[in-house]
Image (cartoon, rainbow, N blue to C red; front, side, top):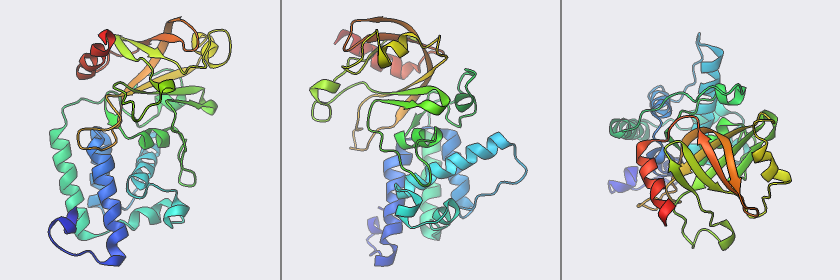
Length: 290
């Protein structure tokens, strides 16, 4: 990667920085299809990683702050303290390197050119965390991006979430992370849930084995409307892509409870507020006949 791929030796004191750039490009940015985020990273890179607020709206400023924190995790994948930085500004400034910035900017330009998805704002659901999120619909994000967007990962705390369901209690929101094609090596018998598309706007989702309709989380799904809870669906085809990189999740956006069948696990049908992207409708529908 970078200088090493050109037959040059990397100085020991620069190895950490080269590793950070490799991590960001190979593990994160190449599996992100959000043009707004990629453009932000390119602009940040081209501006020597300086965050400039200027006269911008509060919402835009908040989005830039979250994007900047996503950038921190893309490169360092640690909290600020673990990476040796006292604040986010210092974390980003540490990325300054003329040669590496040039390659990063060029790589992002290529990624943007290849994008074939159209992102758009999340549907308004009268939930400030959703209505003001920088995340866009129908594009792919690393899970860490999503955790940052909802405050689960901050500069001082990195989320340890590895489950397919994450509750954000303070904004009455639940995030569902679905992997369609499950590999037995990566998923145990207790987590091989049966998830697939019924139609472009209906999604069949199987809960964790403990969920039951008369109590706890299972009852919460049924009473979603009464409890005014927002549930967001994030979907990926498989855990790893053909190059062995961890795949990001495509944002399907808010979903609403339609019906359920069974108990422990429950089989729930969700209604999407916006039809899923065509390429994933075909991918997910194939699983329904499996």
